[in-house]
Each structure stands twice: as C-alpha cells, then as structure tokens.
Image (cartoon, rainbow, N blue to C red; front, side, top):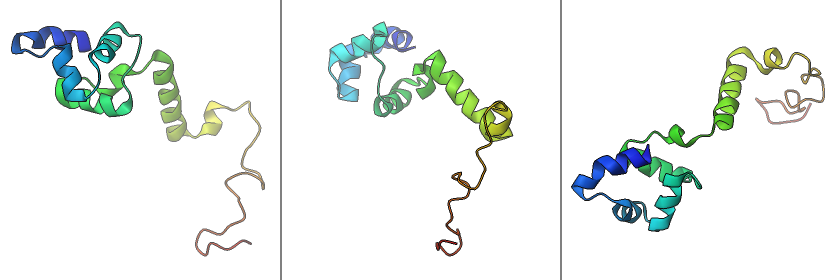
Length: 108
C-alpha cells in the first residue's frame, strides 16, 4: 500500500524523503517499510493513515489478524466455547473470584 501511495504521490513531489520528513524518521526507514523488512510502529501507522490513507491494520501479519479474530470471537461467545477441552477456569481460585468485593473493595 505504501508503494502504491508513493507512486501516485510522486507527481506532487511526495517522495520517500518527503514522507520521512513528515513522519520524522530517516529515509532508509521508509525504504525498509516499502521492502517489508520492517513495519512501522503504532505511532507511525497512525500518521500514515492520516497522511496517506493507509489503514493501520494494513501492516498486520496473517498471524496477528488470526489472533485478533480469535479474541473477537472469544469476546462474543465466551472463551469457554473456543476452548472446550481446557479445564474450567472459574473455580474459587480463578481471577473471577479474587476474594475482593467490587462494591466495597474489602476482602471477604
């Protein structure tokens, strides 16, 4: 996506050097992002969205996308549905029953 943006932007003088200046990174950093050897950190991903319209999630790997989708499914159906073969984690020593009452903040 970044390569397509820079290709389209060159006519307006927006080059790797220009983008590096806007994002306050070195030009070789932009080159690494284009080659795929590095990925921009979250701060630059947000800036790239604002400057180039590249969605922040465009930089995610397939593995990261799968983990996010698994987490979203777990939030919708509950983790016990996704992991039925694992032991029950809701017993007296689980994080769901930590011994502190929410309303008073006291143990008991």
